[in-house]
Structures are given as C-alpha cells and as structure tokens.
Amino acid sequence: MDQLISEARAKMQKVLEVLKNDLSTVRTGRAMPSLVENIVIGAYGGTQKLKVMELATVVASDTQTLVISPFDGSIIGEINKGIMEANVGLTPVNDGQVIRISIPPLSEERRKELIHLMGQKLENGRIMVRQVRHEVMNDIKKQYNDKTIAEDDMLHLEKEIQKLTDEMMSEIKSMGEKKETELMQI
View (cartoon, rainbow, N blue to C red):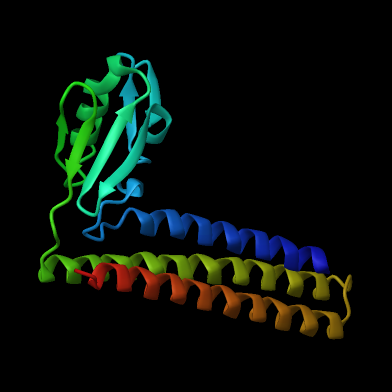
C-alpha cells in the first residue's frame, strides 16, 4: 500500500521538477544563467549536441548582463550561433574570448504576457499532477475490485493520495507566486 503512495509521490515530484525547469525559462528581466544554460548547441561542426552549460560557464556579471565563457575557445562561434538560432529573444555579442548577453528591462506589457505564459505552464503542471492522481486512484479501485485490498484500505489510500495531491498543488502555487514576484520586480 505504501508503495502506491511512494510511487505517486515520486511521479508528482518529477512533475514539479519539469515545471520548475519550465518556469526557469521564463525571462524575468534579470540576467540569470538559466535563461541560456539549457539551450542545445550543435558543437564541433554539428557532430555533438550539447547544452550551453556543458560547453561553457555561464555567470551573471550584474543584473543585466550574462557572460558565457567557453571551456574550448574554438567553439565560441558555434555557441554564439546556437543562442541566436534558439530564438529566445537574446542577442549575444562575441568578443573572441567570451560571449556577453545584455538583458533588456521588461516593459509592463511584456511582464503581463510573461505572467500569462507562466499561468499556462502552472496549469499544465496542475493537470499533470491530477493525471497522476487519477491513474493511482484507478489502480486503487482496480485492486479493491480484484479483492486484493479491503474497503478500509481503499478509503485510506484515496485519502492519502488526495492529501499528497493537495500538497503538490500548494507547492505549484508557491512556485507561481515566487516567479510572479520575480517578474514584477523592476
């Protein structure tokens, strides 16, 4: 019985991880390495597909500037090109040693668009959590119908799964509130 709950918890935690990574791609008007770290670059003449964070160190030198320092200077042009092609609204400047990306401040209208986008991402996360709950509830009902668990166990498991779901929903809500606070900072 506890195995069902721990499996559900693991699946829901995975959803939260995916959502957290997804939210990190939403620009906040501040220079954050997560804006470019996961962009996939065709390095070494396109023979390797690697993320920026695997090819270089990415640091925010101040609130408006990202600095990308490649481990291998020969691929700086490929990293630059890959960031441009990723179409994330950032313009890299290559000085031969490092790539600098200046992050322009967000307009009020753009902030509202990003909050709307973030809302969609959060809702997708909630849907995925509810999907996990639905699947586990079906498993519980199937076990009850197959007479492998008693009715008391079924009711107990359903209550535990609902408690877990509520916990995950509040986690998603706090992730959203935190990101919205970041977006509204000027």
